[in-house]
Length: 179
Length: 179
DNA sequence: CACCACTATGCAACTAGTTGCAGTGCAACG
DNA sequence: CGTTGCACTGCAACTAGTTGCATAGTGGTG
Image (tube, rainbow over all chains, first blue to last red; front, side, top):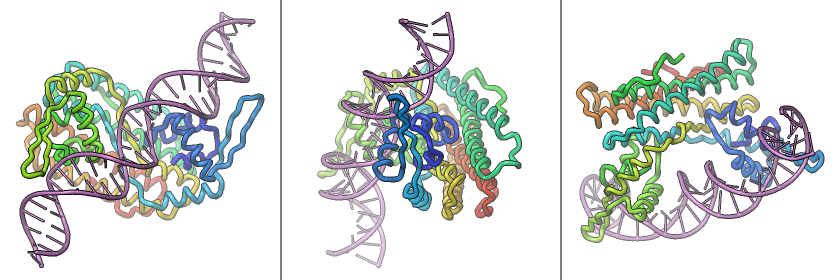
């Protein structure tokens, strides 16, 4: 999976930061996870490494080699799992059918606010980097459509949380216009 | 987390099946996972067990006791992680910026079809079980709003995949009207 | 009555992912 | 020129979750 990201070479650290952008909405990984996978893929022979040892500071730059490229194609060829959605908040809401937790409304509001903030960030990115979608090349269109996924996802969460607030007849604290 | 589901008593097997319904859209677990967590929670003293041993067939019915109920309240009191979205398909799409995989369009169509099918199932459930939302009690409203989450989620996936198809200028294979 | 599907539980071994810690070297701030 | 912050890598120990297997009773079909 990380293969697809080492596609454009870089160090583990850079990869971790890149995760926050491009596909952070659809896949998340800590730097630990990345270093582990990087190591595994190196021993599998899919990556080439150059160690830039200026001084004693070691920075390992990984690049996908032909074997790695083959592996990507093989992986893309086989069917993958359906998208996974996971929400502890939903479980808490479920529990609200039985239990009365005074903190739940606040928690819902918190989630709503965070999703709203993310949406704002993503929309900003879209405005800045993808102002003219028609002029984009394939690479640009791919990046744009992934960002679109992030935007639609956040909108989904907001819409849903608004329905939740309504259904539980909670005070409409921070609900407002989305777009 | 499973606590909230053992709220209405049942055996591990029943829990696993219940997962497929109520909150399957927001949390998934195999029966293995459930048996493990059930065991852990029993030793933690949050559950009471009655073993129905008709013949030698052992069926363990779990029920949350007061200590378990306290634990649920405690858990609901602390802030939880943001909703997590995870899609290997998105990673493959990302890879499509560099690589040309002949199977990718089919894979996208497959995912789209599966999401469409799920959406149809959920809408059916809504039509059958929640025809008159105004008449629902708290419990019913909670179940309904969770189902709404599933519906909105599937719609989000469909919308997004349609954008993907358009962005990659793939033949519009199975795309159609959603609702 | 042989076979299959379903209800029902669980172990063992594994992979994936998280958390906490720990270190280095560089650049900027005051 | 000491401290802070950040780029950079990694180990060790853990929790979560998956996969494959084993087992057993029950009810229905051909």
